[in-house]
Length: 487
Image 1 (cartoon, rainbow, N blue to C red):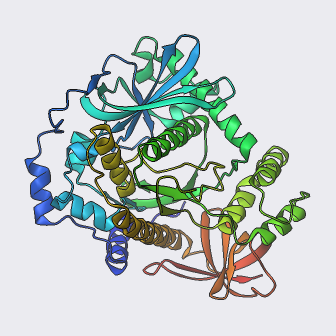
Image 2: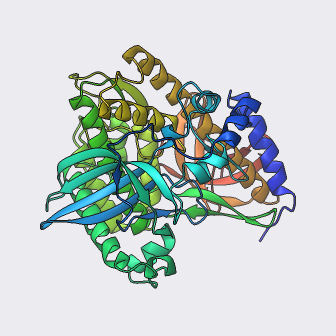
Image 3: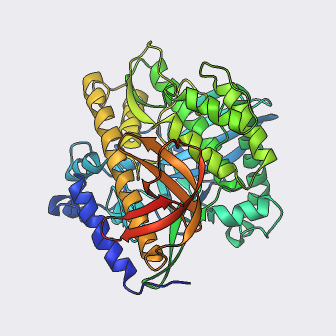
């Protein structure tokens, strides 16, 4: 195991410099810090419609080290039907529109998660405390209350404000191990009577939601994101964050909640932000890629056909499926934010096979979710919309751009961490997958460690999804460059 003793501080400096270069602010302004320090809690605005839902068996499921908890979930009795509730932290109750805190959040538009440091969209006094749905704390939330049919369709959905209380802070890996029969019920869940059965019900509802989406053409993709592993301040390894059943549970419930929120705003005649993934421009290459793996896709984009092919490949070759997934993700293109006007047909989300979809469930971490929250609260109170359509259109472009820049910062720091691990392995040979091919260059990814680099020699004739052997030619830690040449 290769260890770089000063890695954390070096990567922090690289991250801060990369953020500034891309127009992101790594530090909060004095005014924003002062506002955060002066806060004592969430303001309810004297709203008498706020319900008391603190008695429900709410729990959070997130990463082991997550402290900014945006959602709680719970299943409740509904006379034989399946009913699941998602509580979303009421961040707007602590971050007034137009405040210095809001200005910083609207500048960065997202928390930036780098290998060495997290740069939160909101100060930790809010995001990990006053507006975080922490265990054993009373908090204001927006609740998306959904009734789900046996076939996985959301039959009814309601949104309202409520006070909630997190009964158990749980982590993906431990919950997944228990759900899959590989580990015990997490102690925090075991301490709450009835929570084990409730988690089973949540999982069953999530499975039904996912099954219906897949029948409609939702894509079962699985990519490996590299996570830096530190031993103190020393960089020890890069390891992939793998999908598991608990992650999927939360993902499926959030997709449903985001869909209900989008439809709620449209029904109220309110312009909103949608999260869209347009029909892929490189469908022809996806068709070729499928053929190389024994599949056959129609000449025109067809999400259901692609979904069926991916499910078959996952079952046939689970070990290499993440590589195929990554190639497809690259060819699908990027998601973006877009204005949705009431009564107009939205662009929809190709990969999720849904027409109505917004981002509403992570307002501590993403500004579009805070925008959506303000629109929902104004609609619930019969007030004028918090944002006009033209303003939302500009915000959609800005949030898409900033999200892209934040992703580039995160990717650069991951590459800098990888360069630290690989700088003593110049000249070694690796099996690689082509992940990008364009006029500006060709990129490949190796699996151990799971990192991406540029192919600087021997790229002729290669395209996304091709497999190739490469030699590591050079690394540049400061710029996050990893260069390979074809073996």
